[in-house]
Image (cartoon, rainbow, N blue to C red):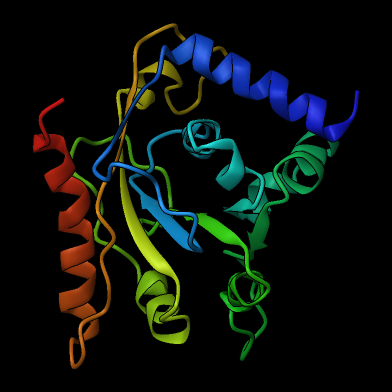
Amino acid sequence: MTSRAVAYLLILLARVVTGAQVRWNERTPSDGQRIYFANHSSHLDFLLLWAMLPARQRWRTRPVAGADYWNASAVRRYLIRKVFRGVLIERRGREEGVDPLAPVVAALEQGDSLIFFPEGTRNAEPEMLPFKSGLYHLAQQCPQVELVPVRIENLNRVMPKGELIPLPLICTITFGAAVGLISGEDKGDFLSRARQSIIDLALTPA
């Protein structure tokens, strides 16, 4: 099977297994370059988010993922490199002076959109972890890119941490309105506001 055929199969499986419902807080999703930033509770998060994007956006949107996990086996390497065209970042054993966000910035500079998880790791708790600084630095370096909050609900129950077989449950993905870095805003205030933009999507009426 070609990589594109594998992608279509995974999209179908993700939609069937999760019964995913998608909600957009904008009438027509923008075709502009974007960073979709979301809460993170499952390895299926980026697959389901990616699968629910309009096709014209999906094929130029790449997930940002940890190299340590996705380089751990030949199957994972194939999926992240050939099927999802992921942007891998080093979370462990980085060389001193090497910017871990350099591959992410490079992908943005060549026009790609990205899926990004600012918590930095999966979190099974209801309350999101504080955001790491990466999203702030990307907002500074790439001000032309829209930052779109996304809330993924119930997926941690479909694919709990440590489990290999997903459970068929209904998930909801809500895409919010884009946020941006305000002139003079410091890192802590921006990250708190970006995190809150995801929390607020839980209150959005269906």
